[in-house]
Length: 179
Image (cartoon, rainbow, N blue to C red):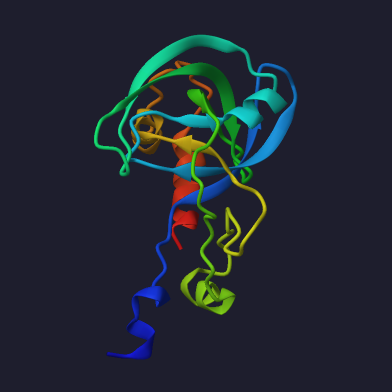
């Protein structure tokens, strides 16, 4: 076995990006977003909800199953509406509803990869949508399957505005983030 093949030497790359989040007002905040097709719902951290002064539009009851629990736990979440804006041209955006949660993940999510490796894989014109280095900025938005599939397939389930083309926001970030 090669010393580089030890379990501690492997990296799991998660699809993340930095996006601009906007609430009901004109206030905007840069936030890190994690794409998670395994989650049926999208989430926003409660501290970001408060910072943007997002109003609760309804409450939703969910049964939450985690790896550490044998039985599902019933929780009630506040649902908020927000807008996600791309940081790259053509600056696409999508309106979503997300459940407010105190925590999305307790893990520090970053790639910790040699920048030369990234440069050797990507074309020079490709922009990185999230830092591959450790950052103090936590994951604040989790985009779940409720929007991820629709965005990837160029459909907008909860938004009927024809001016939006949400596929570009995720597809551009999705392709750049999986390195």
